Image 1 (tube, rainbow, N blue to C red):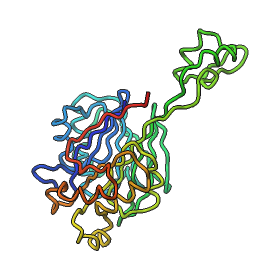
Image 2 (cartoon, rainbow, N blue to C red; image 1 turned 30 degrees about the vertical axis):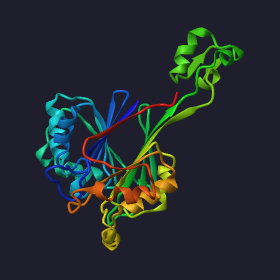
Image 3 (cartoon, rainbow, N blue to C red; image 1 turned 180 degrees about the horizontal axis):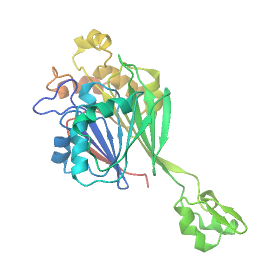
Image 4 (cartoon, helix red, strand yellow; image 1 turned 90 degrees about the vertical axis):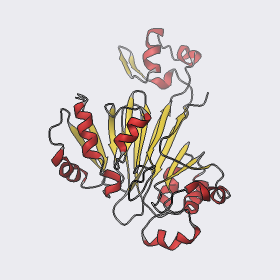
Length: 302
């Protein structure tokens, strides 16, 4: 199971009922935070989730509404007696930006490991899942992210017998282990059937529509996408500031054939995004005008 919570849905500035941009994913005891706008800690508290187990933080870009909550978050994690290393992923310059913000969070009981994105599309293999960063089209360097979890095939006892695999190795091979024996190397594919459908979540914000988003979001179980403007007369403003309208996001969701789309990163001038959702659903029916705290548990298919 992959848990997704959209902690904050605001762009530019927080509102009384809307925190700035942040999303958390939880899988198999690991937590991934994408962006950390002002109010992210409060949103986490409201959700009842802890920042202590965050293993990875990913930043889309260095505008303040996406990273201003980081110093306080680091301090809270340190005060929770965390000692495990924290991995931070972001565009070129991520280490310099974070270290500058750490002027007020200098002493931490854990190490920060930086992974800089240097390519248009770049993959980071983590423990049990994969994070893909992909370049989008904003007025500064900005990336979207895909979280993917693969799922191995079912155990096939007949295949194991046909390959003369001793039963004592079956459990270890099912867990993905490669085993060296006196007679050779045993691999999981020797006892497993074809790979099954895994889980995929795509997150992007602060961008104009572009092909790289559609390509990376292809067939996602959940597509979380910027919808800065819902008003039909804001198209030119979206182009000018390199943002997106609800309708442009819906067309990308349709082209990418995703299962569901949540809109996020609303303009402060848009107090009630749901007012425009019916027109958006004419383009992509499985669209949600997400609110802070919206959560889903994504499950593997049987």
